[in-house]
Picture 1: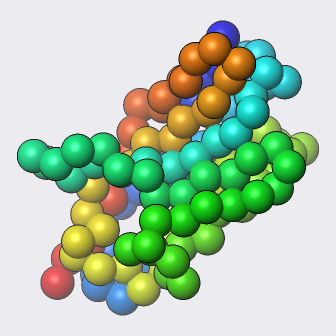
Picture 2 (picture 1 turned 90 degrees about the vertical axis):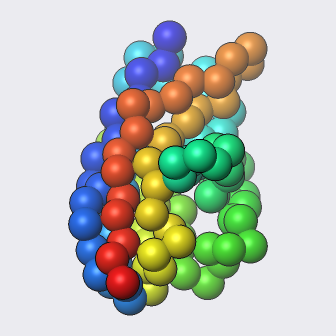
Length: 115
């Protein structure tokens, strides 16, 4: 099994920045890709950004140019740098990992952007 722990969420004013971290442990060599999703109250969980083992990245249109996904293989950690934050970015952010047969989710970290 893969275990994921997110950190770095918090309260920030519009225009500010946060960096989220997702530390992976367990069967990390089975991971094919990792990503960040978010879910606001009453809304569906949506993709924010993904990062494959080959290094390709994908971003939601709503965050392109503002968010950057990166990784540190020595620490088994994926990051999400969030700049120019907007109130509509407010959500619980979840890290996930794609394995051969299943997807693993972290516990989530709250990001709140005030006007």
